[in-house]
Image (tube, rainbow, N blue to C red; front, side, top):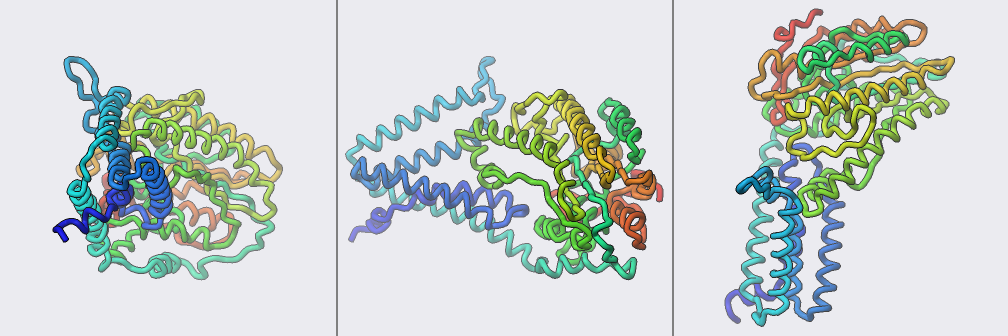
Length: 498
């Protein structure tokens, strides 16, 4: 038997070319994704690949030719977005070659020429099959090594989920930790997060926008709007983990190590949080799942040849989800049991998908979201956010038994932010958040003690549920996305008063 004949008789490169983009996306985002999130995209892509391969093999009566056509199709389909990013904004003699419609031409030519060649060639393609098999094995090994290295490097610092969660369920500042009041007398709680909504002072100082009209609207309806509040952490997961667990999350550094580059422990204590554990309410998350909510599917489609259309669909799903949530939130009051509604709106955070008047917008390029050139888009999106929130608040307060309403942002804006070397102004802009509270019977001002989000539910449970939680000293910490447990105290930089 000739050397390489076995390799040339086994054809698997289309399968590996189909798997590679999914593993590549997972490898790049391994610190934030679970491996289970690859199962659905793997099933869909492999089903499509095998189905088309079988059909082509039946038509061409040649396994190798059909395999190469499938592999060529997969390579061109999944590589388009990466090539587009490389040539984006590239001009030759004033001609922008980076536009999608122009880039499609060489890709389509490559596909037609490649398919024509494989159909017409008289070569047996044995050696080509062996080489291509080897290339795909190498690609899979590279991403597998990256994934394996990550898990090996972080495994020694990793604690099991139960240990992490239990460490946050033990609060030593008050005994007993929680009382169990009669639910029948408790009001509903609407906990609304507006992602990236900057504080009033920050908006005026750094972005030149006066948000006093919205503040006045809330104040006139009985809200206490904190004049200057700060987020405890600059990233959404860490900020929300601290708020929903009513305590600083710095102990995660002791549990998993300050060098761990993995967000899973933070996500775990958000999912199993202390506010939910109180069992004072039926906890309800406002969310609308679609196929593109799978981060792996969303990423590979965004980088594919249909990325332009996938992006359009995704933006429309964002818009539909936001509008649907605003229309359905008031209906929670029809639930018999006291309900805690947690609604997290990705607004006015990028992508900026609504104009100030609610007209749909499609951001030009994902790579530019959040850049300084989009300050106007951010402000317009914030105006739309204000409009929707005003209508929601009016609807929620049209009752004889109004709910508790908490409107809070997880952090502020961050235009031109240098994460590695932030200036004092950059820190103030990023950490300045928005907090407004409505408590029935004119008690909203009791929430003035919650200068930072970590104390929001401590103050609320003390004032409205007769508990006795210590009000923590307000502290603010800086962390990086790639070092989420290396906490740097910047409280003094922001001159936070306690």
